[in-house]
Amino acid sequence: MAESVLRKPAKSIRSFNHAFASKFAKSMFFTISGLVILSFIATRMFTHVDLNLYGYMVGTFVFIGGFFYRFIAWGERPPTKIIIKKGIKLLGRKSTPKTSVEHLGTYQFIWNRGIYRLTQHLLLGWGVILSCFVTFPLVFGWMYFTMEEGGAYTVVGMGINLMTVNADGILAFFFYNALNFTAIMVIAGVCMALYRRLKNMQARAEQNFMYDFLPLYLLLFISVTGLLLTFMNVFLHGQGHYVMSLIHQYSVIITLIYLPFGKLAHIPFRPLSVFARNYREHYAEQSMKECKVCGEPFVSTEQSKDVIHVLNTNDITFNMEDGFHLAELCLPCRRKYRIARFSGFATHEVKTKEANQNAKG
View 1 (cartoon, rainbow, N blue to C red):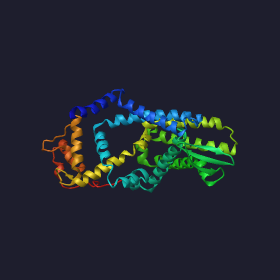
View 2 (view 1 turned 30 degrees about the vertical axis):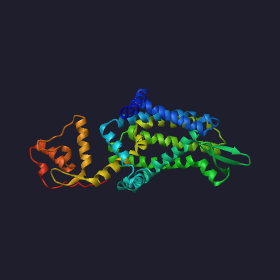
View 3 (view 1 turned 135 degrees about the vertical axis):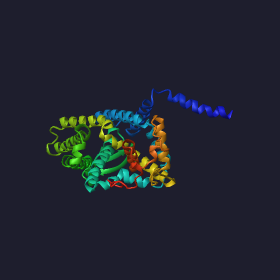
View 4 (view 1 turned 90 degrees about the vertical axis):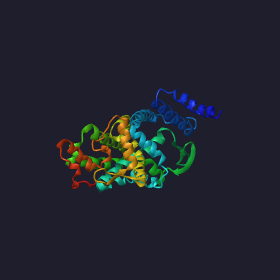
């Protein structure tokens, strides 16, 4: 009896999953449905919808589809499955808030690359993120403003009146110009990135136009056209506003469609770096794997096992004649061992360390 009761939920879950053609279809259905429901609630049954933002909404839906397509294709890989599965279990670690701030807020991991690159990433990253925090709530109607008599605005969030601000007050000024401030941040960050890519010889040798320059030009174009809209409203009394608003809107839509498939995809994927950091730290605290040649601990025992498991899953075997797996060697010894296979000399047994073995940056 108990066994039959336990089987029913599992059977119903399988039947529910069969209602969708794929994981991609299921993810899209629930995400779009959730956004529509939230908009229905926030706009008070669609009574406060700004049709001027319709294009941004369509572009966002296309972006979500591309993001899920890219994420699911990436998440189905064996190593990614391990990181996501174990990373979710380790979110309760005490270090998770600190790690999240360092990876998602202050970009501490870029500090070793210099203050210039840290400043560039802070301006670009937070400029884009804050722009999204302002734009998406307005696009989906989660936040909007109503004009009261007497020159005051009421800020409405999720259908609830949050506050009333004077139209000429300091708060209203920041509300009006929030996207202008973030545009300036993005422009400064893009200019710093372009300067480095044009002047740094190593960067020039490794970059290409479509992958490295195009995302920067798109962000720059969006920011400049956004500032031009404010300029036309304030100094030209709205002249040319309609044409520029369309240009700005199309540039945003194109960028949203492109975003999941280019270099900018690392922005929505960045939170998963917290999973990877927790994974490394947690299992390193439990047990470290010692290199089979030099005896130096180089990775956690769990990670070493996972690497071997993933390789076996993909029918890739690196079992050596010396009785160990290639993944059980640290990187310097692994490189020496590979050289030994070609040269016939046991270079991996030489105790001298590489000059750049512990290099950082």
